[in-house]
Length: 344
Length: 257
Image (tube, rainbow over all chains, first blue to last red):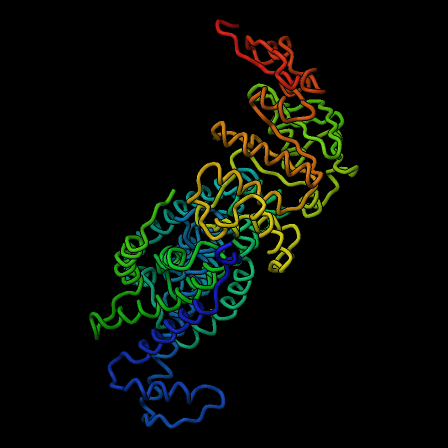
């Protein structure tokens, strides 16, 4: 044998490279803004924040406050949300054996959209209700689609699940549009929520972090199982795996990740589809590679997208959802062309 | 090794399989033959527990219905008619899937699992292709890769649903000879569905002829492959002659039925 064969797994080198890219983009995210702070000072300041790190960065208290209260939470929220959306997208693609699946496939977006619209209309003065409504709405949408799909078709089958997702999405979107039409004055707020925002500060980060941690760990543990599912339900069952049970667990974790991301950042499109595909093209198709690298790559991608959103029209800000799609689509086409190969 | 008694399968309100008795001895190769829609694949699926059955199915003297999925997977390996081959997966990863019944649910494969996979690939002359993507393989290579996955399962029973469909004559022979060699070497019990009657008669020790969901004939190839039986159940006009080794050869006759 020429080379010793080994199972696909995220190699430490790749993980290190991905983490390097993430660290660089986070640093860039911290650097950019109205106040002029040098990269080296940012590095020193970050070192100072770390436990046991006592470094004098030479930054004035105002500048430190700016970094700590505005830029740092913003970069961290972007990273967490991007990572969650990308790993949830990869998981959905695995569960549905469909490269076009995204984290919003099962009605998460429509559920969150409706619930948020309702919250904005019914509780116009309470901004704190929006993330809660979005979270509940997203999970509610998925629950509805999952229940419908499983009662309408073969238990745990994928095709009826996707169709149920389509039905639930149309239905909830129709209600949302209806509610909007009667509350035109709130349209602006609804739309700006839909297009996404990661500038919510530390509160938002603490809100999303527990769900992020749990769902990411569960998904990362299921990489090998998603590989088994990729040969189809019958064969997976021939290998001693209860496909419907694995699918339920993975969907639950991925939907939790999606709902948490949607709750703090609105509907940011494209991350969940693009990042896993880029990883697949560059590093390999096994979910043991795709899941961890999507988590890191998605984080880096959204931090950079937020950076672009803040800079191109500065001091005005572009909605981050616009950037992910505007930048993401050409970037994706570029990767597809670069890595073109015979696909059967 | 395998014994079914009065096994029936209903899909919806249609009885796809009714009252089938099958007996396969350890180390024996049984081919299930029959016209399209006779229930051949359903019989294999029932043995695998993929469809619900009535009646009794015993695997290694244990009722199949009571076996846990992992225990069953260690007993029976199954390759469906049109296996899904994820094009991006490497040959090694794909064959390694066969070790799933031995790997803890959220665990990772052991060195032993990797060794078994490696030796199976070498045995099937796939060692060189181990790091290639499954999507890049030819039809014959794919069939070998599917076989490799089933063998990596190290189960004493091998169920192959039409292992030679879509293969040319040479590759058909290659795959069947391979199965025959492996079962002799490892003492595997093999059950295949096969649509080519002559081929079925050539390789199998015993045939089971299904028609309309019922077992209409069973036994040695020469007992099952008669002009009368084939003519009636396949609605075909054939001539059956003994081949050079005494096994029956089925010819189509023009102008019938």
